[in-house]
Length: 438
Ligand code: TRP
Image (cartoon, rainbow, N blue to C red):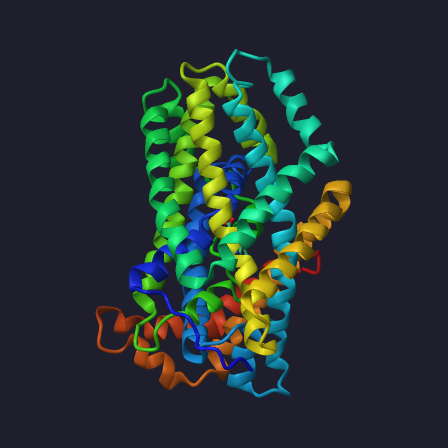
């Protein structure tokens, strides 16, 4: 066990911004809009928000509380609370594995963002180039190992640099700088989007309920998206909670993080769909939505280059503050459990993720495998175990004292019902359904 004094956030707002930075990422700005597009708009958003309240918030409170109480990484935390021979360590170890899995392919996608930012700056999207041409640019990028490798490495380099600088000077400081900028860029994009002719159609698509579009797939997608977007199920929030002061309370900061993450996903949805509906009605683009459809639209817009630069800067900022939360999980584990210096841990494990990411670049199947492995298996199983642990195993006096003496005190029992019954049941049902068992 590490003897080194644990770092802490310098303020409560420091925790909120760093955690919101970890949560708000490609999941909000790249994945949420295209999932919404594929799953019929408003109805998906409603289910998603339902998942956020019933699954996301309770599990987030559980994770942050476990971290704050133990002041340890996921493995150390479960060990301390359940004993070193207990099977409850499994979610801890799975969390470390998940961090490697997600960071490796996440960095490749984040590399695409930097590549597109670079293309935007050099004016590639300035002159009304055709849809085919942009499609080819994206295809060329995703089939060029060298180009992807370069941008993937650049992204991983920045990630390592920030985590290397530590909790206060790295994670907190950069989140405090980048999150306000990210919000500013989103507001500019929405302000612009709302003046466009597609604004009405875009808003209608996002707000007008169409229950006939509801399918099993939408529900599964919403649950998966909820865990991914809020960074739950693998101990990232647990690790960030472990840098909280023991005296600080967890419920209200968690409410803020969940609120900011959901608000930014919705705002990104508004920005993307008001722009998209102005120029096209084809929403079934999937992952290509922000890499093919948007640049195509930017190239037709007045000041398109400027908006393309703003948009890909937004994606880059969102991605980097999330990537550092993933590397931090691995780093905290090796610092706490093996006394490894932070500098060694960040460089060694950043490099390992870089190499695994290169595997994703060479093999699309490997990329899909890591993506599915984490979002379809590791995160839901992790979330399932964490909620059962918090509901049935964790000393409830610890939890009660978090809720007591405040306006949200009445939510202790609803929280308990969620983590004991609702979350595990819902995750299990969705999991079994997704794998064709029921
Ligand atoms: N939440 C981030 C996003 O929306 C991704 C992410 C960062 C993540 N840390 C995580 C996902 C931990 C799952 C678990 O892009």
